[in-house]
Image 1 (cartoon, rainbow, N blue to C red):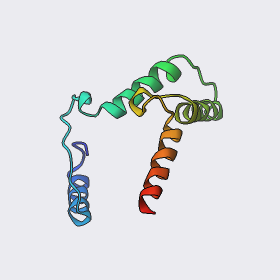
Image 2: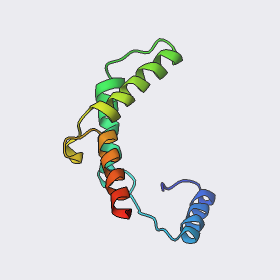
Image 3: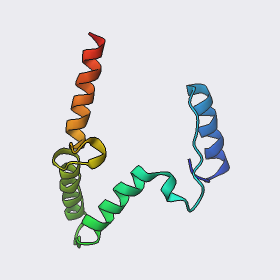
Image 4: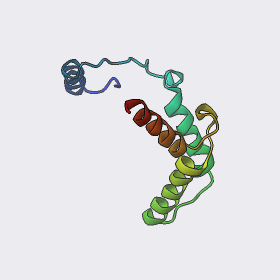
Length: 101
């Protein structure tokens, strides 16, 4: 959670307590503490937002959705053993189901 309004922070703290989970603190100005989001954000910015000009909201929605589908279904990721996220997720789910049998 961020350092947002106190009411939000208290609500999240209570939810975490009742859900049996915890929180992680990320210092303001320390994006390296959340590398997955930073990595995705930099790719989105460098590969899409910095090279496209959107003339309409609809055009932006279509182009960004196309990029998202490409990123998640066809593009290999080194952190996933050079598999696309959708392929990795499918294999992980199959492994989980096989473990239940």
